Length: 166
Image 1 (cartoon, helix red, strand yellow):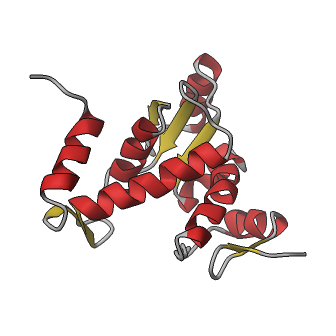
Image 2 (cartoon, rainbow, N blue to C red):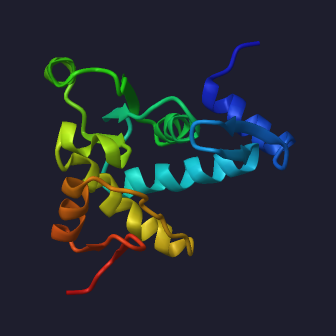
């Protein structure tokens, strides 16, 4: 029997919802199968609310860990195509990859914003409505000055990452 990585998570989340699935030592966090499934659903909904559609390409520029895993599942759940980028890649390598396959969106952590520009803000803006509807907030810890400035320019409150009505 063969099935996809995404189907494996769905089945595991159904059968083992409250069991510990990941211990991310780099981020000092842990998550159950249900946690990963729920977070992946929220991100997938955010990507779709941004206007991405089945078959669109999304680049992931995240270190190995829980957030990468959740993003990988989210991209699959939304029917999108993933292009993986390693944080250790230099700017020229990232540019070459983007020249070959132009992503519709980029998912990355705040430490990478200087390397790819404001494309990550597009994902944050679309996800903000989804997080608010779920009663969730995203905290940004130690953002780079460029990331903080870009968030403020976009009308986002860095403290809680909630949309401001200006």
